[in-house]
Length: 92
Image (cartoon, rainbow, N blue to C red; front, side):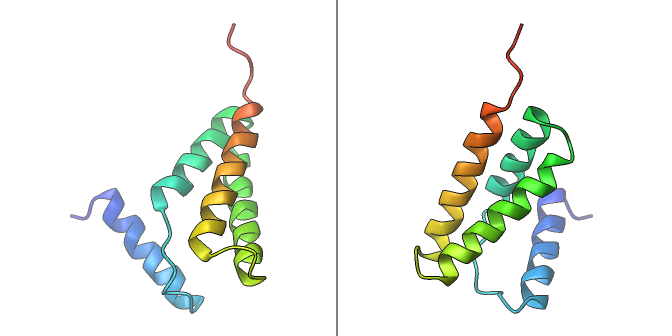
């Protein structure tokens, strides 16, 4: 029986292959961490929306030559996480 990490890696590999971008290194845990912060700081549906926009921003930055793929991904995930965390309700 596969564990969750193995299932996610297999799914990621299938997605990357289908989109013909199999040579890209995706930090699955960073993406999931961003999704968790967005879901808990804003509302649950913010998780896929936030990760999509961060991925799109990273792709645009890398595609235009503004940053390397890894740099663009790290910057986009970092900015999105910072913005999402800032939306968290204040603890009472």
